[in-house]
Image (tube, rainbow, N blue to C red):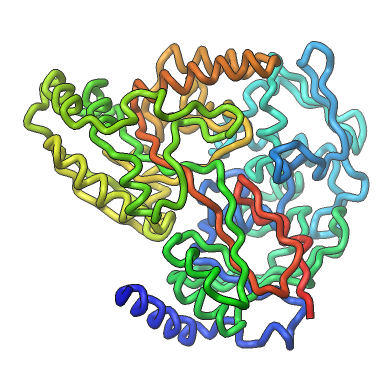
Length: 506
């Protein structure tokens, strides 16, 4: 507790140094004073993978559809959609009131241009693999878009709900300005971005979703979450996104503050690189899986705030982890597997992690380092700044990586980019086999929910047994707010989109 007190004091000092939200919320009631610890790493919605980027961009850009707190598809730019009987045609009707923040209307031409950009390999779009069934796109009129698919594609609607599938202006694509400025059709406009310091957002008066609850949002970037809590105590901050369970669990002790805490689909994972020796050996990967006590990692790094998970985190589809390969720690089995693989004396490797995202990364790495030492694996921990880590991660330039990866409402949308032969993040996964690819394709085309569940249960079982990654646990999304803030709805995807309807009560 002495350590934590010091941390809080340092946070107070940091808050003072950065001059957080100098104007009180009472004097500036129409602007939401907000804080988070990690800033966006870029402004191109099609390319960004960092959570911090997605949380910002989803306030500025809009996809065709969204998922709500119950993981149901709801309208966004599109007001309605319909599949043809054979499942190979998907037609959207756009909201005729939808406008970009430069005042121009959102048309079918913008939708077509956006998806053509996502599908262009040169773009390097994060979600490209989700849309490879799109054979062509027709725009019969300004508010109608028809996607012609090469095969029935059940998860494509879920994929289209992501900010990585945001609709951007065709004119900005042509000008080559995507990523250099932010022009979306969402609830807020980005007026100012000082990287790693502050974002200033103002309400988009033309937003088709209606009036926002506040005139703007000023976001302060405070790397120490204890500083955020200190600023909330003094009412300099109205609302905050928290990632560190050490800080989040202190919020309920503050009478003036409210903690929003919901389980999320995102998962903490130790990613192995099966293209690097000795992780090329199945028995070595399996030995690592058997040697790790996932519950201890969760308890130590995240104060037990979460639950051990297999690859699938969607509650309706997830397999009980106890049914998966080596989810109960078995050091003797791990040593036997290492010996059979020819590594009885162990080996040395480096694990990378991002500083601050998640804030548990260093602690997870330390627990895993200690556990793997018992089977002779000497693990060197290398922590990196987030943008450096993301670059290395996207290139697959690591032996092992501590990661927090996003979940999705559909398993195909969640994993095809890693585990299919056409996946655009194969460099990150460095592993594919015919079984995984076949199961993914079957699950993609299957329309019967019970049959899909069975397919993905087999997929999950096979993936855990092959152990290219070691899935650890799922945790919670945490936001903290003053009690005069109303209207925020937390969701399993971690989105902050409902800030569009938040109000400040006097």
